[in-house]
View: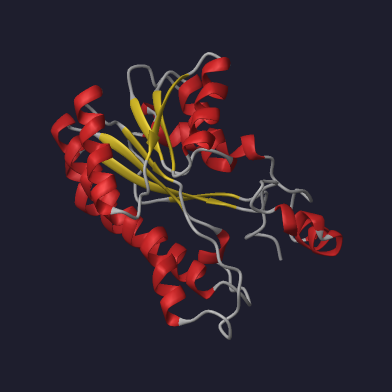
Length: 251
């Protein structure tokens, strides 16, 4: 339904989890996907999986928080592909500690990856997209931006800031045909959440707080990303699409 043929997409942190599912879905919709991560072996494996099901994917190993590495990666994209149509800012750190445990330096380090690096990469990607007269930037937020939790102060702040940044960029870049939106996932059965799923009491508690009474499966995030990356979403910008099985709306 959503055709991304001849589009070039960069999905950060796409070696596994939700990032991988998004990368694979974009590729299966016709895009050439640049799979990103810091670990070469993991990125290579993800690329092979996407190619095995008929998608077009290439590895692009770099740390998004390192400015020089980011610049080198973008230069390579320009040299090899000559364009960048879709950027999915998926990579992020998670810290579930409380305010008694998170020092200011820890707080700052997480924001560097989850917020500052997203701004830097989006700013550079926008230069590509402005020259092309259009593009899509999709930021991955989280429920922590919408609900208060007793842990993860730096994570909550980074995702709240990310949603504000999404709205600001949508205003700044809209005149160039660039849309900027965010996706806010609920509780998904990923490797990152394996410890939470293993805690039977916590797992059931979270299921009870979700209207659909279950955790999301990783592939269920993909449709939202493909839609926002497509021409069908050309008049949608500055929005947060929540994919949470009804968690935020459930009392």
